[in-house]
Image (tube, rainbow, N blue to C red; front, side, top):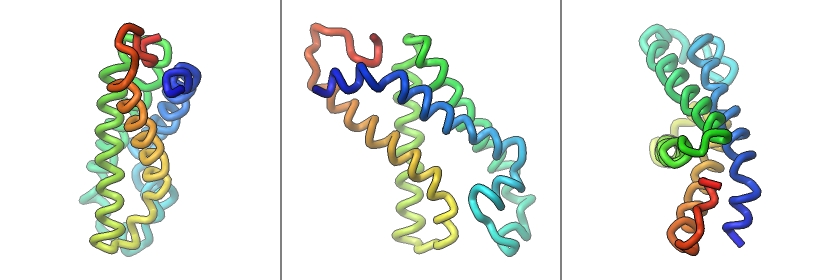
Length: 147
């Protein structure tokens, strides 16, 4: 059942999540605009933006590149294993950071990152279910992500 699910959804998953992930390039290209319009930073948070701007730009280029790799891996199967592992790890780390900052630190401003949390949460769940499938699959068959 899971094997068929992943056979049917893998390419769409890679293209869709890759495209959405690649939108992080906006943060590289327009960090101030992104901080205000995508992550809802207010005027007080933008007061010392120059201290964080390069960090946001670095995040944007790094995550944007992962998005491009995800889209390329829809076509080039040899990229899938490493790209999916890195993407799952990076996105699950953000899910943990979001939950920690919202639930433990009680930083209400971090809710501005809810869109990233939603995408990364989806990727984390998809990746965990895929890992379960991968570990329990019929080993005589090629795994779904390599078909």
